[in-house]
Image (cartoon, rainbow, N blue to C red; front, top):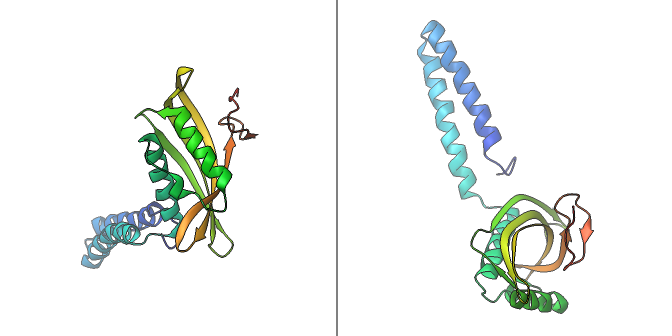
Amino acid sequence: MWLTENPWPPMLIAGLIALVYLVMWNANRRGVHLVLALLFLLSCGGIYLLEKAIVTDGEKVQARVVQLCEDFRDKKDVSDYVSDSAPGLKAMFQAAMQLVTVQSDMRLSDFQTTMSNENSRCKVHFRANATLNVASIGDVGYQPARLIVTFQRENGEWKIIEVERLNPINGKKMETLEQSAG
């Protein structure tokens, strides 16, 4: 959303103002208070619809992360998500796709998006949890992950230029294949 990236705070404020006017109307039955209460209640819906209509760059990048994770899980080609300036990262994605199978219980949460460099770069910090099956090992169970993925705008598209894996508990940087001990 233009002010908060989240429609709920302005909707909550408008709802509380509507409640105040409704209480005032109940106390003195003045029509103007009822009209104002209804207007603020309607503005809650308007704020929600407006937020859905406005899609920021941060929201576009978050949607790209979700689509990337779904495509990875579905074993679709994900090389298009990675910048041509990061061939090592493309190779890592291809190797990981051969090594790991993500089950359908994948859950993505805790998205935090930070724009920089005049909105030409974006870092998305998020959590991903899923049951994994690793080639030559088998089922390794439900695994948590915490990642920071850095995107750069290239020819109008958001492309990945860096991936940082963090310990899901303490947030310290981890190597790609390191096990999280907590």
